[in-house]
Image (cartoon, rainbow, N blue to C red; front, side):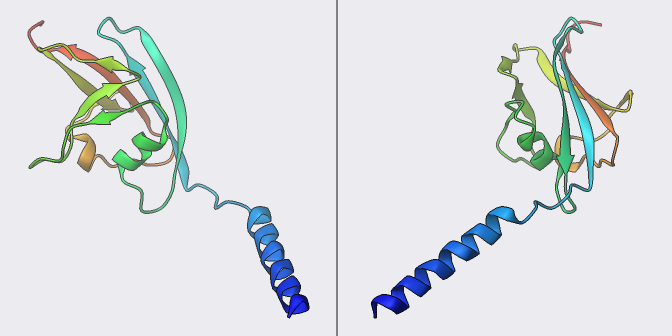
Length: 127
């Protein structure tokens, strides 16, 4: 009985070792996320891996840039906070893709390898 338990324990250790040595899946690409304050000053920038089937929101969450989202609504989620930067009453997070203002919200944003996203605080009362 002790021998069987010993062999079983060795088997689990071996399987654990194999799991630890198995390489992680390679990403399907990367995007760059840059965050700007209301004055256009860079607060941070990061390259983030993505995998087949990821949503844009999942990639943002994986960025470790402290994205905080609203509860899902009719059009998905809104960005409330990034890098501990909260919004004023007349501000929102704008985002662009490869230098062009995005026409979709983050919940429906598409992305591809090499895309560059910029998030910036905008005051909608200032022209």
